Image (cartoon, rainbow, N blue to C red; front, side, top):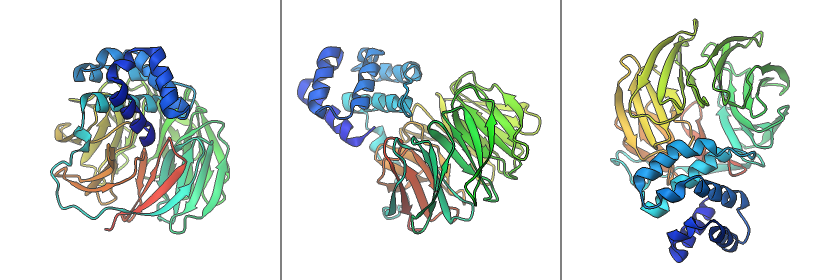
Length: 406
């Protein structure tokens, strides 16, 4: 949530009392007064969250958690990523009403690095930043967002060198092909586009999803592309022909998380049925289901060596799983927040994810926090050499690049 709006909400509750939130008309009037009629989208959604039943949860951590699980998925609006704003509002209510500070505590401070330095701030997308991705050679950074465009930037200078136009709605996900020659994008217009990275021209439009495309990812050999969607399916496409070669109905709900194993033999998917499923990429057969203390998977990532799988969920947990046994080998509680993809560093030694105080980077084995990046971003990407981190915020228009000092 916008940090200024959070501060306003905290002040309102401190001065007027949490009982104010039980009275819709009074709360609406006070929000208008305290915000001076700014933050209209956040205020409107806060009132909807309250009407959806959060008022019953005030004063009860258990009921706040139930509300997170049962109410947020019902609160989709027509503007960019409103469902995620709703989730953020519930988290903030838990924070300001219950003193939920789990996400602000440093877990087992390990061999900490100095704070990351912001080296570039790029004014990128009106309507929010939906995704960021480095080219495989690290020379370029791509970003997509609520203005329906994809922009290509020189990673060192920050110069905008291309603007790719073709989607008719917000861009939610982008991915470079392994050879860097192509760029795939998934959007709220239910389509996937393949772009020539050199010329910026759209060369294919993949149609078949019946709702927003939440994620796209290339197979390691670049021959296939996997996509997850709000239509409760994920699809595998042949990148040469553009044909849909498999459609898998995996979780019975929105699929925000799909990842190829580093050898390309398997695909992992996660969704709202509280499972991670592993699929044979060639046959489409479900070969493994991972279950545990999981609530609505929001992101998954294979470690570069393929031995582990990291997941993030709506209960603010990051869990590391042994791919062979399916057993949980590490859990970081109260660390992550919302939909930010859990991201491995290129060497597999670190994990980056969003937390209350910014982006956190932890040791992938011990879970010790190594570094905090003071940016309330929603999406991050490591540079191929692991020295830099790019971040984007779906409620802001900027893309930032951070020097991690490694």
